[in-house]
Amino acid sequence: MVIGYEARQVGKRAGIAIVVMAALCMAVFLCGCQSKEESISSSTVGLASETTSRVDSASAPVPVSVTAAAPESESVSVTVEPVSQSTSVAVAKSGSGKVVAIDPGHQAQGDSSQEPIGPGSSETKYRVSDGAAGVVTNVDESAVNLAVSFKPRDLLEAQGVTVVMTRETQDINISNSERAEIANNANADLFVRIHCDGVDSSSISGILMLVPGENEWTGPIVAKSAVAGALIQDALLRETGANDRGIVERTDLSGFNWCTVPTVLPELGCMSNPTEDELLSTDSYQQTLAQALCDGIMAYLAQE
Image 1 (cartoon, rainbow, N blue to C red):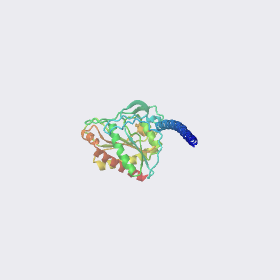
Image 2: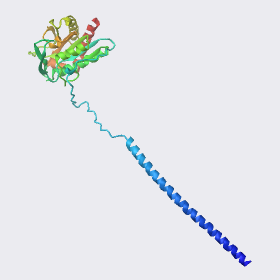
Image 3: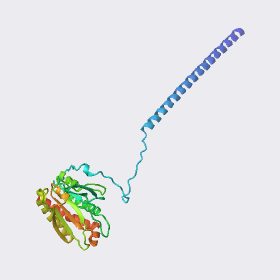
Image 4: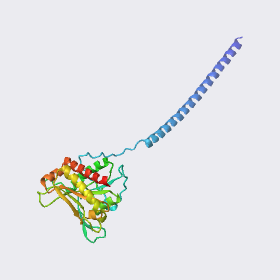
């Protein structure tokens, strides 16, 4: 009985040992698998991280260098190609169906090279002269002409008139014949050439209206130009109280001779007169001139 008991105990201990050994083997196997899975998981995470990094880098906004606009008080240089390269104008007519071309006379720098006084003429003139300068203000006529011209433009557009400007900057080189061509190509109902005057006597002041005289080029536009000149001159004198220097016909102006549409040239005052020179540089007087120009132009267009 003792021998049988001991045998049973030995067998029992052997069975336990076998179970323990099996458990240890299973634990080692499971640890190895877990380590391998962790290694694979770590590798996958690393790959995902690298892919994400590449995607983020590709989709990230690229820094852009932006230069802020210059404050309005700063002087900004603008370069404009000469309009001589093209004088064609695409005009989309507004409500009234009327088109007015406005030419702010002269420019920052005159051009003394020559152009024919009229189509096919052997007689020539400066492409565009320098213009006058204020005897007191020393302001260039071209600058006053430009400042004034924007004002009737705005008033006319408010009345439904389409306005074509020959220039909107001082920094341009455009001849008198080219300015006329802009008005022609726009099929303008009227071409208004804004100028101021400079004369030998500082005592002379007032408004002078120039219109085309009849010659080999201007015949078709003389009558309508005369009507427009009279209506605009009347409005200018009435609303400004300036001296009347009359209406004068000119046959020697290339800006008239190249024109195929009615045209006028108001000399809005004398920059050689100290009082008028200072007046012409004030916004309030420029606005008065602009309103008178608008009224005279609208009176002419109403007859068309």
